[in-house]
Length: 278
Image (cartoon, rainbow, N blue to C red; front, side):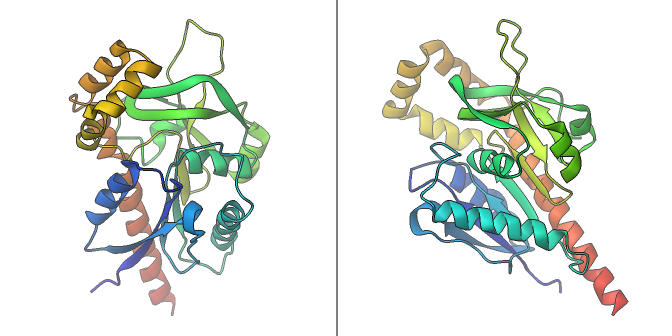
């Protein structure tokens, strides 16, 4: 019988109510025959996993990705550096796999100096089209998705002005860009990056499911917040998009599951090769 792999889920929500953690846990729980998971409350309790896990998923969260309290953020960056160093040590045959979501994605991109993190002119919110780059068409997470595909986007910050020299140095690739906006001159934000064969992240929320989104936004307080901050049209369009199985349902069942499938398969393969060498 195969050994259970260990997944660390890093909760970056700073104690704020959210649907993202439920969705992440639901997806990981579908792999209960292969993995067991532990949740770490990074920003509220300063909990951080060690290197004794096989797979790491770092969630989205509120606030400015360039700011921290000097404790939880330093510990988080130290972990990212440790994981990067571990994977780049040739003697470590079995690599660690990492997925960064939204806030975590912005922090990772800033940490690796891949581009500029800026505050948007206005909040991007709703079910948005995501366009694949040439690299995205070939990537294992994206190859089975149409172009564009759709995902839940909720952000005040963005990654723009990529430093392509740094991308090349790291071997990183831009996998996706935000929607095409012909009516404005703003640069399109980067929506997904593969940092390395084992590390990848998205600006949007691939974990979001329509059921949870509906429950959340049908509540009067949340419905009114969307209508007051955006418009009734935005609210109606978003709710209608949740019923379209070719939109966030497809993304929900593709991105993170593909990441987990690949991570589990790769780790198992590396483990068997190690046994054969011994």
